[in-house]
Amino acid sequence: MTDTLRPVDTAVLDAAPTASGSPQKLKRSIGIVGGTLLTLSCVTPASTLFVVVPDLFSSLGTATALTIAIGSLLCIAVAFCYSELGTLIPSAGGEYAMVSTLAGRLAGWLVFVLSLLVVMIVPPVIAMGTADYLAPIVHLNPSMAGAGVMLLATLAGLLDLRANAWITGVFLVLEVIAAGVVAVLGFTHSQRGAGSLVSMQVADSGGHTDTVTAMLVVSGLAIALFVTQGFSTAVYLSEELENPRRNVARTVLATLAISTVIILVPVVAITLGASDLSTLTGGDISSMVTAWSNSAVGTFVSLCVALAIINAGIVMVIQNSRVLFASARDKAWPEPVNKGLARLGRFGSPWVATLIVGVPGALLCFVNLDTLYGVTGVSVTGMYLLVAVAALLSRRGKHAHTSAWRMPLWPAMPVLLIAVLAYILSQQDTTYLLWTGGITAVATLYWAFYLRPRRETRWLVSIPEDTQA
Image (cartoon, rainbow, N blue to C red; front, side, top):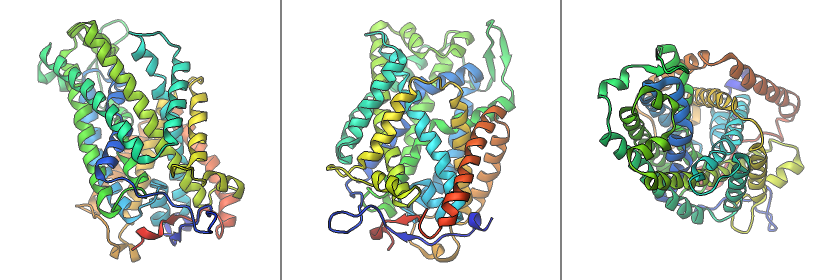
C-alpha cells in the first residue's frame, strides 16, 4: 500500500543516450494551435459520431444525446484534473507519469496498463469502420481496409510532428464539415420536438417502443466518457508543446469544448430528424443523410468520415508511440527493450515505438473486437478514476509550490469525480469488469516480481530537465 500512496521522487530524463552521451529528448516544435489540431484529431469527432455513437443509439435511443451531455459535463471535471496534473508533471508518459509521481509507482503502473489497453484497442476498431464509408465508391473487406489504414497511419507517424499537425489539420476541417452537414440536414428535417431528447425511448428488435432506464444511462456513461476521451492527448504532447505550463491546460480545455459541440450538436439533430424510432435505433447515419438529401451528399459525407478515420489513426499512432517511448525512458522493461523503444529517427519521432504500435494494430484488425468496446469503456473509467485520485494528492509537499495551472473548486472537484466514476464502474457488465480486472491482475504480478524488486533501476518516472523549473 505504501507504494500506492507515497509520491515518488522525480528522476532526471534518462533515455537511451545519443552518440555524444546526452539523453534523447523530444523536440518542442508545436504551439497551442498545432497541439489543439492534433488533440482534436485524436478525439476525431466525426469518427466518434459515425462509428461509436451508432452503438449508443442502438441501446439508448432518444436518451443518447442526454447521456453524451452528462458524460461531457463529467469530462469537464476530468479535464480540470488533466490540466492541473499535465502542467505540474509535463511528460510524454501522460497519465502514468502524473499518477506515479503523485500517487505512487504501483498506481502509476496500473494507469499505464489501462492506458495501454485503450491505445492498442481503439485505433484498429475505428480503422475497420473505413470500409463502410468507402462503400459508395469501392467495396472493401473491413479487416483489410482497417489494416491498410493502420499501416498508412504508421508511416505518417514516422514523420516530424509539425508536418503531422498540418496533415491532420486538413483532415480535421473535412470531418467538421461532414458533422456540420449532418447537423443542418437533421435540424431542417425535424420529425419531433425538443422534448424527445429526454423521452428515454428505444425501439426493440421487433420495432416496438421500450423505455430506457436510468441504470442503462449510467451504464452508457462509460462509453460516453470515451466519446470525448481524446482531449488527454494534450498531456502526451506536453514534451513537444512550447511553453507547456501554459499551453497544456489551454489545449485540454479548448479541445474538450470544441469536440463536445462537434459531437453533441449533430447527435441532437439526428435524434430530432430521424424518420421514426426504429430508424434512430438502427443508427445508420449515412442512410439518414441520403434520405434527407440525395446520394451525392451521402457519398460526400461518407468520404469525409473515411478521411476522418484515417486522420484518427495517424494521431492515435503518434500518441500511443509517445506512451511507449516514455515507458522505455522510464525503465519499465528489460534493458534491450528499453533501448529499442527509446530510439528516435531522423525526424525526431520514436520510430521503434511507432512500429510496435502500428503493426500489431494492423494485425488486430483481423480479430473479432466487438466485446472490446466494453473493455475500453471500463479501462477509460478506471484510468480517469486514478487520475482523479492523483489530482486529490497534487497539492502535497513540494508540488504545492510548483508553478502550474490550478483547477477551481479543489478538492471538491476530484472527490466528486471519484465518487461518480466508482459508481459508473459498479454498473458495468461483469464480463468487461472481469476481463479488465484480469489484465490488471497480471500487470500487478509483473510489478510485484519484476519492477518492485528492482525499484532502484526500473520504473523511474522522469520529467524532461527543461520543464522542471
